[in-house]
Length: 119
Image (cartoon, rainbow, N blue to C red; front, side):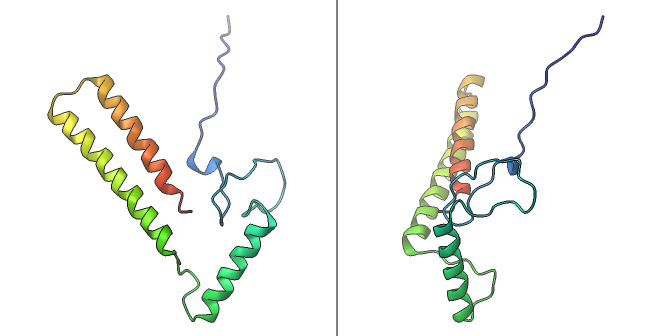
């Protein structure tokens, strides 16, 4: 008697692609060729304009330019991640249950996932 087991594909981090400009999720298509980097032409244009401005300004090609608001948002999300990690450490010290630790760890993963989005 043969047993057939159904397996679900494991999702790797790079299975989901995002627009290199705005961060929106790119549609997954079975297209052949070079993968898309941008969700739409306006994002492609803004990325080109930023690259041209970086080049004109004499900055290195791999320079990252953030506005004041983008930097403040990134700092806020880093603070949230640190707080989530501290919550787990405090819960461990206080003898939290497995369920409580699971909830806190899930919250920390969600916070870290949000942090990956730069824009």
